[in-house]
Length: 410
Image (cartoon, rainbow, N blue to C red; front, side, top):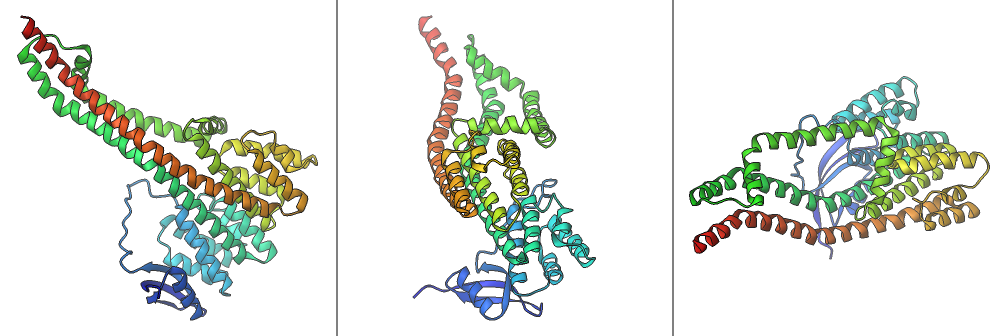
């Protein structure tokens, strides 16, 4: 028999009454099915013992809506609308239980606009810093086709997959980031605390220090301004980079071109871009968004300026009567497999299904590439760490051998 687990839940019934409690089930899917079988819409489900999860927040860096919050919002919104609950009632409940301040504020304003007679997509479009253009476009298509719950379900699926992919990329980069940070801290600690001790020993023993050791001693003396200069340069570079990324399309294009050409991370970035492109375009076409509008939205939501530039060329080609696949062949970022699958979809009238298959393929490719990257980076970082430690040890003990040789020769 499967092992049962205890889940804490928050739910709402068809009348809009909220409830909370515990339920026993083998897994989350089974617990959700049990709640729905009782006529309740689950708003939150947490396994007992897993609820104490803390997240580090830095003042001044918490104003952005996380992709995970949008995915949860879309899933809950879709469940409520599918159960027959009105938009206004759904928005009111979602606003009440939302834990993200910017999303909560946006939902309150969207609710006010919808109650005033505006459309849901029109109201969401006013908050472009909260709701992505992809979400707004799909909600608009869902409103037009009378299938807003289905559109929200597909949005939730897309956001959940994107969240999972980003999580794997972050996991692959976490280890080298931690090792590099520890290496810098260790170097600073050696220069501040260890080198002065050895410097005193060298002065007592006499003799001239080797050039590399003298460099360490000079760096230790100047740590009072080198450290702040290093930190200030890093912060300034980060601020300038972010401003340029927001302000200059040409700068973003050059950065993204550089990303996909990098020797280690480039293939991973390219596969991630292909996954997002295929997933987003397939979703938009599947819910009935016009091709020209879908290409515009995809270019702006893929997160890669190279693809955005390609979409502008594809739009012009499609406007002139050419096929999408023939235009994509002129852009090297799109592999042959992608253009061939799109061509088959155009000929068979199933382009959205083909794009979904391409997206699934690249999702798996990103998974494999992230695992391979993690496996290959770990030994490299160990070698780097060993090289730094070994270099510091040699630099500090090299004068000992020189002084010992001088004593023997005298």
